[in-house]
Length: 217
Image 1 (tube, rainbow, N blue to C red):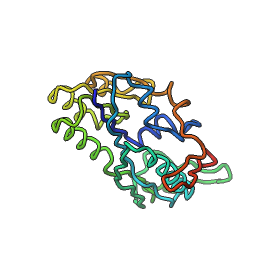
Image 2: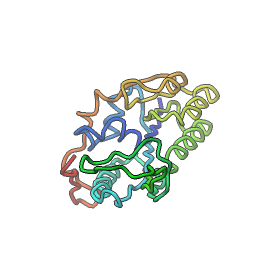
Image 3: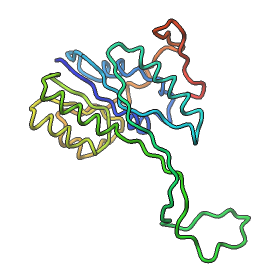
Image 4: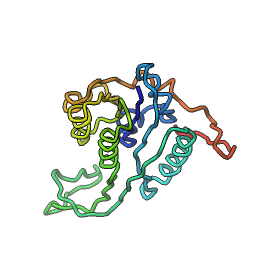
């Protein structure tokens, strides 16, 4: 079956990869292992945004190395949303944690604090829009989505129930969201395939130069 893969990059990272040694993930190899052998993977769409180095300068460098690694996959296309870091005043729902050295707490306790708010914008919207568009355009016979974001329930439902096309939820968590399970045609788990689906290190880039896995990965 002609298959297109849709990858929610941030959801995959935070749900399945962040606390592991499997961040140098070859997504095509992962999908080939997780899906039945009769799937002909035409394209992989990877949705992400470039992270800000304002809080962690190394994070941007690490992500850039990984995006370069992904770019060596001929059938993979990266779609960018935006990554926003802003400072805002927000309401405190519980008291501030004070250090033991503090003898007294402020009087009165503050109700608001100025915080750094990190938001990723656009990726899930782009993924959902492209998934539905491709389904009704006849771009695939089967789709697979890597996510556990419940915001993508409706696009998945439309593909399965209105476009009448099979769609597989490739779950990055052991217990995928019920709302996603209920609308997907199939559910498969990817955790057992992560360790083996890794890029070589170093990886040779399109220009012949090595792409190195970040040291702390």
